[in-house]
Length: 363
Ligand code: KG4
Ligand code: ZN
Image (tube, rainbow, N blue to C red):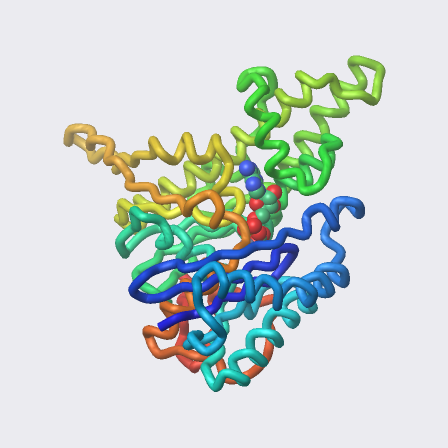
């Protein structure tokens, strides 16, 4: 079964072809980053128009890359939401029209399910069950994943998503859009001890997280530096040090909450997905992650247990068509398909699926 996957939820047009037995056959991507950079953020109307321009050429490039033709496609998977309404409609209309003209099914895919399953595209795949940490520009969630479609929300950010915090902090430090990845590069040059920033909700008894306060803490640190120097300019090394402190604080919180989720569920496999999963420090810390069960009175201290951590290949961390083609293929295998051309700009992963089956349970 050959599945064409279409991703158009924000500022990336992704098109890919996934085949059940041979895996990923083609993967094409166009990023609108340069177009939006001029405005300091994504302009929804420009994003929709650009998706419309790119969808056909990217699909043809993917078919050519895979050595396939339109007639070989068995199903068309597309991102139904969450995302920008117009951008989603561009991909959904294209996918549904193509599926209709081919007489094949169109499969609506939840964007976060795409991210969640993207580590299964790697050569070394995680086995169910696992805890998934979804860290993107719009979401920061911990999920218990017991199988395809069996997701339980364990905890999430109560305010900014981790990626959003990266981007807003980068903007505040005068870095060009999109700032998250740039901030992470500058953090490599910063000292880990120059600034101390808070770890919000680190010790809260649940799996909720909060990142908006960190941005404010960075603002306060910047103001102090400016007052002390009497200049609006932030010296390069100071800026790098702040980047490092910010990144370390976010990673510390994510690691502690992931450890708690692993202890709570009893799972020993962790999957990290979403754009922030590309962060070098996060990868470094998570690769060494272990957990230790609480000590019981009169008993020896439990040993540290190593966690198997899986990351998607770097190119599938940020938005792409491969994860949508893959999630669509998995859904097709389990008999799900979409009936109508609709998009869901806001849709929690706890929402009831198109087929009437509950695809996600909330803890
Ligand atoms: O998953 P994604 O491509 O799109 C959403 O669905 O949101 O994630 C994009 C987010 C952005 O906020 C971006 O700043 C962040 O991922 N990001 C990073 C890095 N690369 C991308 N954040 C931290 N470190 C990075 N290296
Ligand atoms: Zn995404």
